[in-house]
Image (tube, rainbow, N blue to C red; front, top):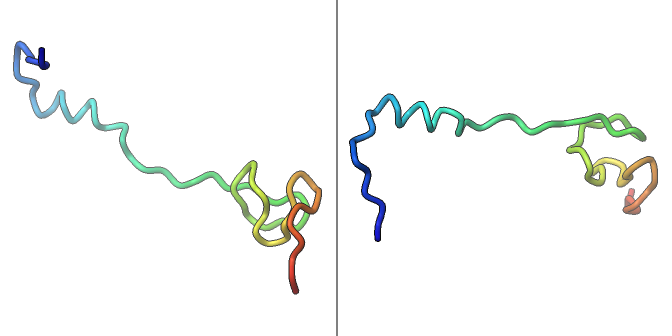
Amino acid sequence: MSICPKNKSSRGRRDKRRANWKMKASTLVKCSKCGALMMPHRVCKNCGSYNKREIVAQED
């Protein structure tokens, strides 16, 4: 059987339900080694370190 609502949902009720689908800015933290902004729990793109250890060797 398919879904068959008993009554029509009003535009206001429908839009209240969809009100929390907004986009938000991604969280950024400072790198503990170089101080650049980066996403948490990821390797820093600036210095290649994660958790104060060098993971990716940077080519100068």
